[in-house]
Structures are given as C-alpha cells and as structure tokens.
Image (cartoon, rainbow, N blue to C red; front, side):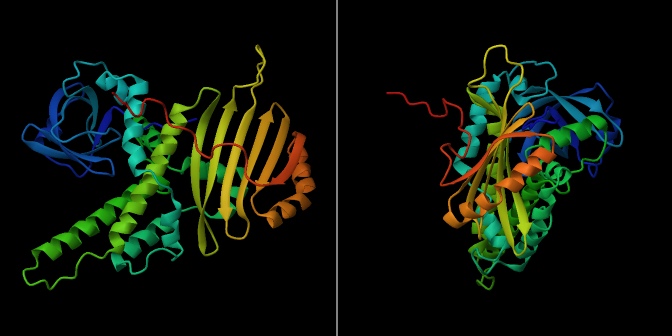
Amino acid sequence: MLIPELFTSTIAIQPQTAGSALRAWTAGQVLEATVVRQGLDGTVTLRVGGQELQARTGLNLAADQALTLQVAQSGTQTVLRILNVSNAGATPHSTTLAQATGQTPEATLIQAWRQVLPREGNLRPLLAQLAGTGPAGLPEPAAAALKQFSATLPLLDMLTSPAGLKRAVSDSGIFLEAHLAQALTDNTAPAVQNDIKANLLQLVVQLRSLASSSSSATTGSAHGAESPLDPALPVLLRQADAALARIEQNQLATLTGGPQSATLLAVDLPVHQAQRADVLELNIEEQKSGVAAGDTVMPWSVWLHFDFEQLGKVHARITLRGEEVAATLWAEHGPTAALFQQHLTTLEGALRQAGLVPTTVHCQTGAPPRPDAPSAPSSLLDLRA
C-alpha cells in the first residue's frame, strides 16, 4: 500500500523541454543547477549551464537554491536525482528531503506544519461555489475552471461499494506524490487525472494566471478602459488554496501520528450528490492504548464524519478487532438519531452477513467525546523570554 509522501528526491524534466545540452546528458553524469522559480503545481524552472529547463518535483525548492544533480535516466524521459541541496554537504541518494538536507524527519515535519497551518482551511467554502451558494459574479474563465474541477469529484453512490471507496481514497490527494514517484520508478504515465490534489493544484494555477492577467491588463491600461480585477476571483483563489492546504494537513497528520493512537489515514472526500457537493471526513487508526502486553490482535478504528443538509452532523466510529466489530453512531439532530435507531438491526444484520461478529451497535444523540482532527506536533512555536 502506498503511503503519503510529501517529498521525493527526483526531478523529472518536462518532455517539451528541448536542447542540445539535454540530449547530450548520459546516465550517471553529475550536474550543477540553480533554481530559478517554482510554481505552486510542483513545476520548477532550473538553470543548468546557460539553459533553462522546465521540470516537475515533489520538493519544496526556493529561488536561487543550488542543487547538485545526477542523471538517473536519459532519453525520452529525463530524470535527475538530487545529490545535494544548497550547502548542506554531499549527501548520498535519499528518498526524502529531510535526509537530503541533513534534517531529522521530525524537524522536516515541523517545518512543513509551519508552512501549512497559516493557510489551513477546509473544502466546504470551495464546494459551496460548486453549488452556487458562494460569492456570485465569477468571471466566465474562473467559472469554467471551477466546473472542470467539479467534474473530477466522485459521486456519493461510488462510496457505497468497497471498490469505489478504495478508488476514492486513492484519488483523495494524500497519495499524489507517492503515485508520481511510483510512476517515475515504473517509467509509466501517472494515473492522476482524478486525483483531487492534482486537480486542485491545476485549479489554483489557472486562477492565479487569471488574476495575474486581469491585474496586468488593468495596470497596463493608460486610460483605465479595462475592468478592475473581479473581487470574487481572489476569494475563490483563497478558498482553493485553503482546500489544498487541508489536504496537505491531512498528509502531515498521517505522517505525524500520535502517542496513543497512530492515525494511518486522514482523508477528506468531497463528493457529489444531486445538486450539492459535500465532504466525508475519514480517519483510520490503529489503537495502541488499552491493549494487553503480548496481544497480537490490534484493534482498528474508523471514524467517519459528515454534515449532509437533511441529516445534519453525523459521526460514526467502527472498531474492528479480529472478527469482532463495534459500531457507534452520533447524530446531532434528534430526528436523525431516531431514524438511525430504527435501522440498527439492518446494520447489525449486514455486519453479520459480512462475516463479522457485532458486539455493540447503537446510536445516540449529540457529538462524540473526541477532537475532530489529529493534532499537529509540538514545538511549532518557540517562545523565548
């Protein structure tokens, strides 16, 4: 199973890049490069000798940063392996940015949390735009970009089958970099056309380009004939970037875990149903607390949170230990709790039919006594007197 991977130590040169120097590179050749700029979509412009190259990487690189690269693959697809970043000293080939820069994994996670938390948001404001309940008056190109993103979201019915749910989790965005790295290893085209993070990155790039074009046109108009920047465009851009940061936060939460329970997956699944788009929050944990020493059967818990218009906020916890399963539902609306109560026997029967042994199946009104989101690591803020 692929795990979320925020960073990879390879750089893939874009196929459209051409040049005699590139064609002359051979596998094993060592190159010195400088970062010119990096885009939000993972593309990076490198200066190698006197030539500028377009590439793609999962690394977070800064302008003017010096890189030592080695040609790992040449020909139709040129792949460069990072040997050294800036002045960190010669470092052997690594699969993580932390090792390439000499940082510990914990320090790398803390740095990543610091970059993500100021932008952190959620997917719901952006999804409100899809339903037409957000700020009105989007310019036509922005509305078209939003519609294109909407078309990639899974339908709610897809999540009712094991295969559909597995596909939706795989395309949730938290595996994007792992899929890209695997595709580079296998020398295949990455199948990320429905990946939510990849499509959010594309949406953000499109919106930034529209905002930049509108701003340039307004500034360049000597007589003020051009229309000013549409105020709805920056709002949409902030919402898209906040949704992107939410996926990055889930990736970091998955990698960080906790002392008592390890969050193996933290996933937000935006889904279509009728004319609405909603979010299902899914957390999969391996419970470590309360397990007797020497016990080889570890309990697993799945938390599910959603807030549909007709049902209100609903939370569910399913705990599996061997073949025994316990399911507890919380509905914050009384009528929803009563509805669930009427169908608990149906749920229990379905669990038995799946070969499981239900130990507890019940529903209560209210919210569960637990935080909704995994906590960030400590040491994010350093206060000195």
